[in-house]
Length: 236
Image 1 (tube, rainbow, N blue to C red):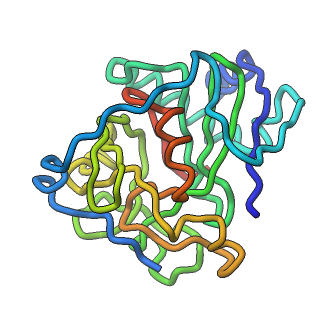
Image 2: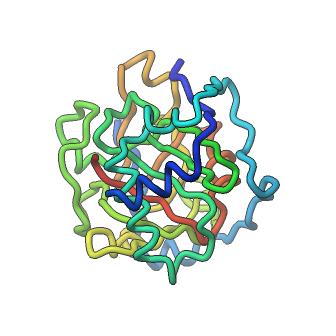
């Protein structure tokens, strides 16, 4: 199984680092997306705590987060958090997707800056970003019909029930992903993002640009991020 990590991080080190620096159809028309059945927000965990994630492997090293998120990518994410601060209501937790890593790696990183912890999960990329299905993202695109993943900062929004069941809308905050809402780039779960895909194929399936996670991991994502927090997607 793909390992996941729950590690203690040094909050001050994070802030200093920032200063020093098989296709699943998910796209629909914006009108369809916006008219989908609304879903109540999930119950959030207590402040400063991560949701319970099964089979976590703990690490005690205070700076262990730097072994999972590159300092360069972390710096980019924190700079983006600062740049878009007026639009991001909650800055205590962020998610970083390292698209330099293959889809077989747990490359969706959750950082709890207040609680000083981190965890990570598998996440799929778009078929338009990996047309040969190698498991590696080759390019980003913000274009309609590209079926590609987009680079940049996203703001988590409301929940709804749509084609892929429970999902969460995202707003793209950068010129590189500002079509996200109208492209229906959302967070949802999918069978092709389950861990058994790694055992069977050595990689995940592909979305149409959405952040697709395993079917039993969606609650972890929703409860950690909630609404009004940032997901930052890029390559290091």
